[in-house]
Amino acid sequence: MSATRERIICVGHAALDRVYVVESWPAGSGKIPVNRYDEGGGGMAANAAASIARLGGGVAFWGPTGDDAVAREIRAQLLADDVSTDGLRAFAGRTSSHSAVIVDARGERLVVGYRGTALQAPADWLPLDQVEAASAVLADVRWPAGSEAALVRARKVGKPAILDAEIADIGILKRLAGVADHVLFSERGLQAWSAGDPLGGLRDVIALGARVAAVTRGAVGVDWIENGQADRVVHLDAFRVNVVDTLAAGDVFHGAYALAIAEGQAVAQAMRFASAAAAIKCSRAGGRKGAPTRAEVEEFLLTATVA
Figure: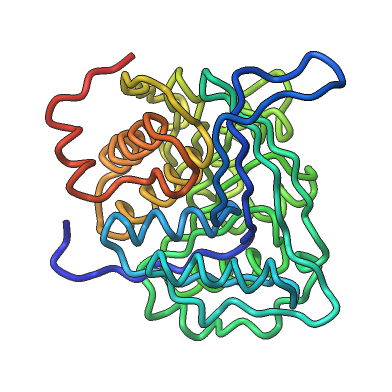
């Protein structure tokens, strides 16, 4: 870990997750028993922020919520995870995001999410002057206005601008990918970008000016290309773990990657560090609550094997 405590700004979606663990998903209508219930913070950028804090990084979350009971719990969860909420703004008359997350015995998840109306809020209130003092910006696709503003400012002042490119409207994906220098797709996000030609999609992102274009592929691992080496696809196998719950694993990956890049790690090192953090999370129940500490990741990497 570097000698200083990096400060990363995570911009985008914060939510409240209500998690229901069941034996299996129903094939049709009916009633099924819940084996375990949990409630915790959710949202892509918010989960990543909590993961960064758990890994020892300094982190602030920027994003909108409604002015409701869900918003108050969202803020409380972030504060409990040692995330600064100075950039979390509650908008009167808008509603906050929350989800019902159904997790089966294999650790797979079904998310029934209500996005709310807060994500339609403007971004003109963001304290963008603070980006210059940050070590990196990580943004998701759920709040395009805020993510675009923060990514543009990060590139302008020479800070790593990292995009969590989950599935979204293709116009939003292209807009945000065009202002980021690290674009990390989920498989679904890359499918939305470039159906049937994943490698071509990654190359398109590099052509837009990104330094790194990657796709996380769950149990298969992660593939990426780097600017100047667009013909060389690098693959890292996923680490072998007993999968309990995949909820928030992608968010943990993105948070760990952002921290590693902020610390000055090479891309390959950052991918390995992030993959280890996500693997540990998959071995534990719960969403962001399963995110590992820095010591846990470093210990895991000493003996970990790939799947």
